[in-house]
Length: 147
Image (tube, rainbow, N blue to C red; front, side, top):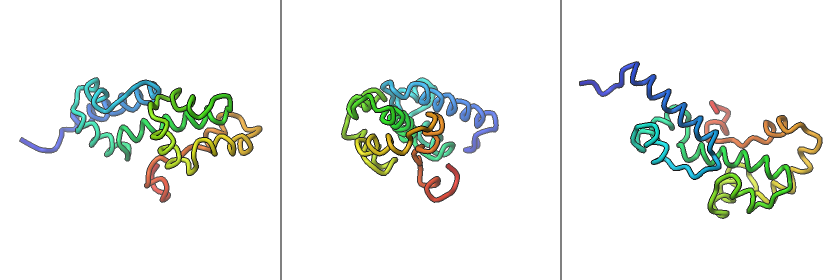
């Protein structure tokens, strides 16, 4: 018995991981957790977390929060919702956790971002503003490596 997966098993794992990532991208605003994602992918939560981190450089939870923060940034730039409304709109249930994670990824609290972004992105197409303001998700990207 070998401890290394076969090529077929490895490809199957990658396909499952891609489906999980795609689901997070689509359903970021819904209540998602690693256990439910793993159960739906027919693998254990521990295996999902390890393999997701190996494939994408961050945990499934971190990836989910980054998607939520990216969407929150777009809603805050729009300017018609309060920070609390944006928090709940993107699927966060705790304003404190949302604000902390937002500040970690963006470098400023959501309320400050909302005020500042209105000036910085004025006149930009939304697709350009999204790219210019995209948060840096992981340490490798911050140091100029793979992101």
